[in-house]
Length: 101
View 1: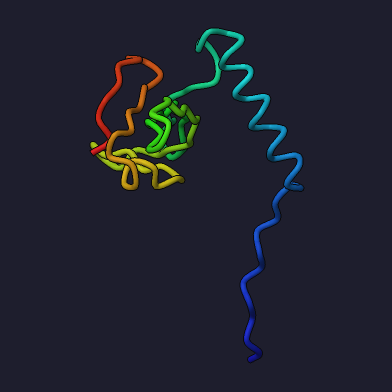
View 2 (view 1 turned 180 degrees about the horizontal axis):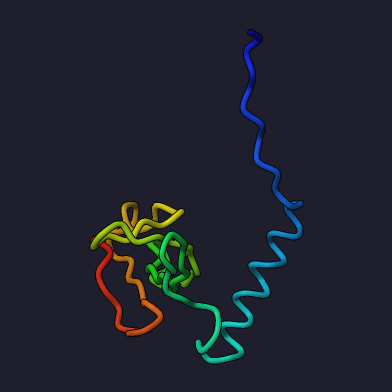
């Protein structure tokens, strides 16, 4: 039996992915946060706004990340809370920041 390599997942072109994220961030800003963030559905993922402080400038750097709930933990696709202990996340329903670590 020949060795079968797993097929690479098909992704849209990079320009399309970047355009979708730009539109997503603008939609969040234009609606004052009413659209653009959501809690994960069972077996699905959600989106939250994560803010971290820049090391050199001290400026707040917000980013919208996808996440899944693993019991009481949130697992993001980016490892920002682990890399930046000062990161704070605002969940869609509460809007209250919580510490990254």
